[in-house]
Length: 474
Image (cartoon, rainbow, N blue to C red):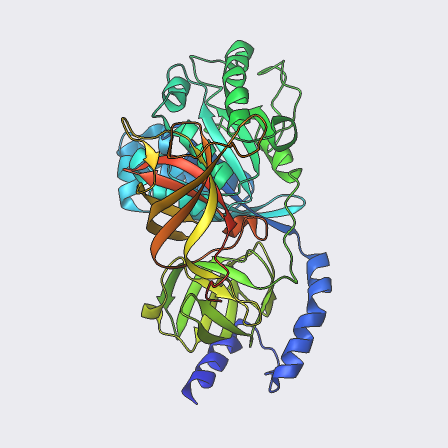
């Protein structure tokens, strides 16, 4: 059969391994491999850089790659020259992350760029999320795959204020990051070397005093899940090594690499039912889907389902970063080559799922919502329409019914019947979409059960799925 030949030729050059004739043997291998693999392997974390446009996200990302030896001096010099030719001298570090022409000309990151680096204990994949208002949906697809957020804030006079005020991206990104499951946040106060700042403790404290209450109100436990630190992304100060006391006598905390290394990561279940939301797909000797494993493990030769269309597929090959691997567990970013389905029959938002316990597919669900900021003159009531973003799904939805309002102080439902709510309210409601979507209850799979609602390019509410209809087609 053509398909198997194809796969064999593909896998041969990558690594010569005995061909497995028998499915049972393959599965047995898979079951035995994990522990020795896991013990040698550094843990893997996805980091998303978020923050206002121009806060220095790409520059900081570029500097990290340079400091961790992912990019050599020659490349940097080439970028420096290129940036000078376009009279954009301070952007050369960003060129490492911003690879396409549109981004370099504008100095804005549009697609979610990707790059790898390692520290003592951890392998990181950087997802560089765009900060410009019109690009927030890209930021969502970046954050939905991230374990840690690095919120980059500019200390330069005026720039912090712009990013932070209503309508600035800093606020919206923090709220989105929290909803999308970025549970740990490093807040880096960048551009400390700027001539308006000069590593001033007063400026750093002022920013901290404004950010901490806001982070708290966005649902972060500031003591446990947030760390603030000062850096300069452009010159690399306090990034790989601690800042020199001559430059900044008052900082006694860690540098960025130490802070990243010490982040404690949420545990995912390698033995749970397999779940991998698809963020992209393409044709390459079969159908290839890309995504991040949220639960369970995958092995070459596995039989899985593509949901919601219940298409049975077989796993021909698994690639982690650029390497072909036999198996992969939760938290990894994968490309998976499948047989049994055409590329045009998959959309982003579909989920590669275990056969025994497939992910539910529904057209309506019950959710608890927190209303952040409605558009001018809008009231939130049955009939309200918005765009739903949940893992990699983007679908239009309608609020069908408000069930009860929750008292923010007691966290208990209020007695009176609720017909509409305003900003700041917490409400339980029924939400309907036009086509089947794959979601889970937040209590079962947080990553697949939290969402944002947006209208006219603005996040109006964040929420979690509390209940699914019992007849959900699984």
